Image (tube, rainbow, N blue to C red; front, top):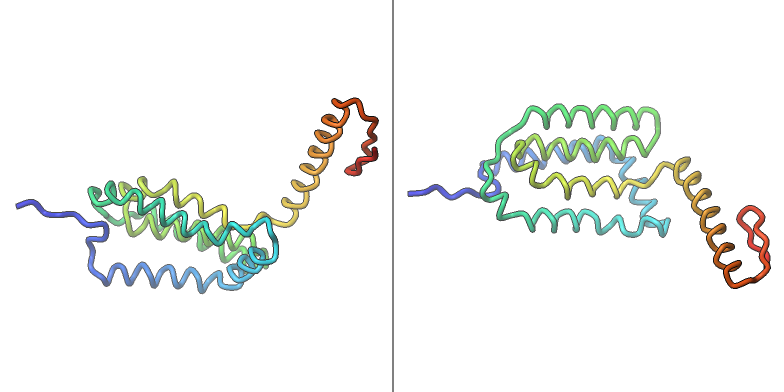
Length: 178
């Protein structure tokens, strides 16, 4: 008689322990997570972030057949990744740098998944989990510098296209004069 393998073969206690670990992670970075959600709602650039966890869940669900055939073990590497993420989170909270704490939270969450699933199952779901880094808004200094550079590139391309039609145009900074 063959034994069926299930996605979560462990007892409900282990699933509860996973939920407790994730709850502790949320508690440790709560202020940063609230700030992250505030930026999602206030800046149009991050409106997509609400859908990322759903998309990650869908991609993991698509891999369920492979996961059912994979044995779940525990991994010390996941514990190391979890503690590294917690260190980054605490560093971000202590320095009042939300971006660092938010990235630390994502690393900690991925580490906790690795801890409870083991290497074989984690390898299957790692690509969707990496999408979680997209929910973290870029740090303000990086966003501003990148935005300015991209605006200048966009202006130069616009002027080049206008000149293709033999129209006199002048570019000064980011301003296009016809």
